[in-house]
Length: 517
Figure 1: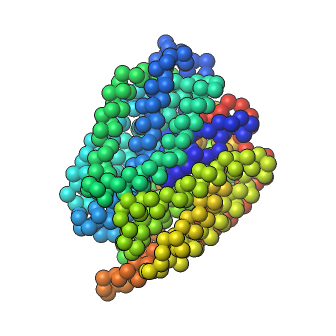
Figure 2: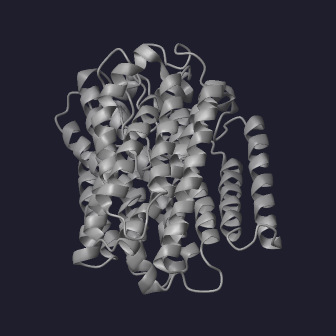
Figure 3: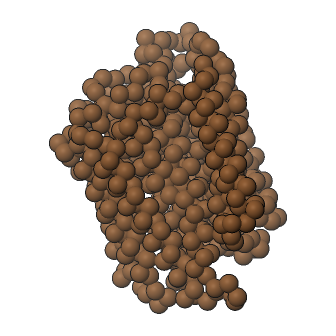
């Protein structure tokens, strides 16, 4: 679930796309002098069809963000029908987030070098086929594999869409309007996914939460082919294939090792996967420091303030993608709410963030990001602590709603300044990699966090008998307490790394488009 952050420029009322938790893409920095030149294939700034291009790209944004949450409400029914274990169940979400986050940086490079329209169309076809196969899954393995494919193609779609939006609206008030629309879709997409998932699961079948993508893909394909013109970046187009392989395999081994840890932290398979993941990620750091065209330029993460923003974004991802999945389980499995009511019951937090985002945006230039980014995780941790007090026979109004309001307040304080801090002092040619990294951090943090929280959940269940509702509540409480501790760690990191109000804000200048999921 993700909401739009504050504008990258604090001195003008813009609203670039903003996590997430859910959805994510990569920002690009085409030179304004050529970005709108028809000779380069970009949609001319005076062409009336650029607004139809915006409609197509906003539809794509909705598709990608919505798919991060729409399946959450359907998981209890999917698990029962396919006979999935709790480990397989969490991989339905983890596979999408992990593939999406790990491949985002590469997706941005492919879009720039191979062609943004071509990448957009290929990503759209792949996403549609993967959605169709996921809905046809006969067991948990097929569903998880198809969800991973969805995430991989989303990593092509999202940066291509944002790049096309950037070259179609190179500057001025229309650019701000376009990014405001794009960002609003990112903000409401997660909530739409929860409600739509509830509707489809309750009145049709959980598989339609995946098949619903197919008609949207067909419309976007036809419109994209007709309306969007090709554009690409000039210059060196080498891909960091080795870096991509190392980060994907390293993160995959790490997350799989955490999944195995549900049964034993000391088992040979668990230790081997965790060790392999750590070694591969260390090798990734070494390779990135020595290659001419790195997937992630090391200079981006060497800045202390920016590194703090990346870490905090990953921690927020553990909550929004990992911990809150278990809230939907509690609403349906323990409280017995229908899928639709469970989807609606998960929306108040998003609404609170949307309402408070303008207020926090006005506070940001006055108090600076550090107080907000320290207080936000602490308040969110308080909301999670309230959530951990759930009982078998508790009511939604008494136990769930207050915690969602508190969570919304806390997350609004941290989400609004996060993108500004992450882009502080970034050189123009690094803007895409920096914004992609902060968005990928949300997805990767969510996939790692979900594996850790699932381990906490399984550890709280009885080992010798089938869990009763009270046992399930104990498991959910363990997840919420673990998430609260993680958010407190985020407050400590923000206090230590985000220093002072001045250096944590980007200087005035051209707005850098960003997108978070």
